[in-house]
Length: 150
Image 1: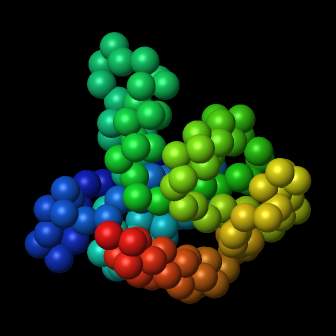
Image 2: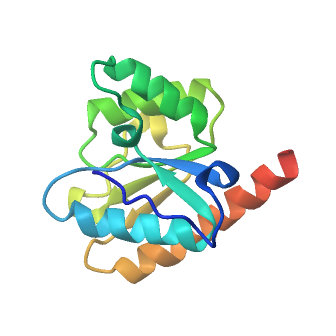
């Protein structure tokens, strides 16, 4: 999931809030990634991924830790219960990073029981408009909350 580096409103990425994306790869995932990145950019947030931070020869966990520390918040798709995503969410939780979970109704909307108390957005991959609308509200809320905390 390489994310196109694009500046938002002539602002350098270092001046923007950053959101780490933990999104699936594979069939149908590029549309979800496109929508999530579009929402973030529209809200003045710079999307980042591990692929953006990995250096040749670097340990995977070093890239994970660097990305998690740099991010202001996370968006994670837990559809399919990917072990790496769950591990990364655990570290984010330990670092006190806000996050929202995405879960596809195609996967029965099944969220691991340990994550049931966290904010999540159930989405239908065939109704991207609803995902976009809910995600915009979350991103605006977290950016506002982070602004107050600064």
